[in-house]
Image (cartoon, rainbow, N blue to C red; front, top):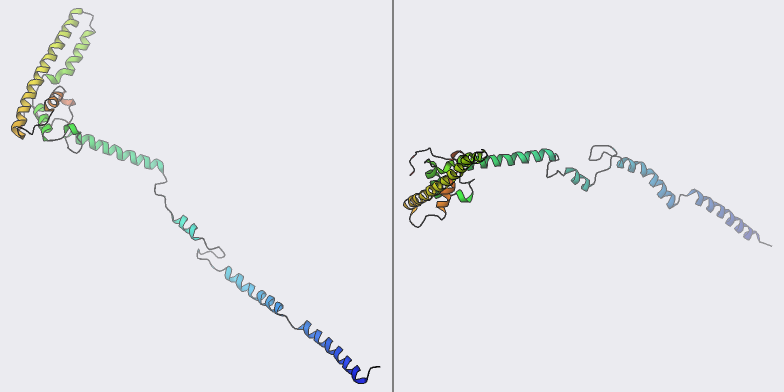
Length: 226
């Protein structure tokens, strides 16, 4: 049998246990506190995420640095390749025209190596200031060729003889002109400073028609050369 004191103690312990269980159920735990705090802060976080981006659009993601660099790049060549080719062709045509005009006028910057120098200019002026038989070689050869098509043997034979005679006179004329030109160059530039090949250069200039010579004649016929 239990004594009254023991019965009271047991009853008191049972009542205390029920009371402690109720307190545990009503008291919020640390986990519940963290969950509540997170749920309270979520709207603020969402609101901050939807703030205005640097691009000026609300809710738009901030662009990456690589995307910004790629957007700022500019092509080194024009996009219109057809226009670029046309512009390049126009520039090349302008340069060729400038070179052609410069060469025709005797500009040293546009002359080939064989035509450069004061001695070559002097030879051109010496030849251009005189009228020679050799410069009519091309027209005379054309007449002889036409004569060979005439079905008359005598005309063909005379034409060939005339051509050979013309060649002989032309060679003699070029030889004498080369001798005179070389003598003039020695007097003007010095005995030992005369360039090689001046007589051949003079002969090639002499057998060309005046209108076909390049560079073009810069002196008139009969003009005194100094």
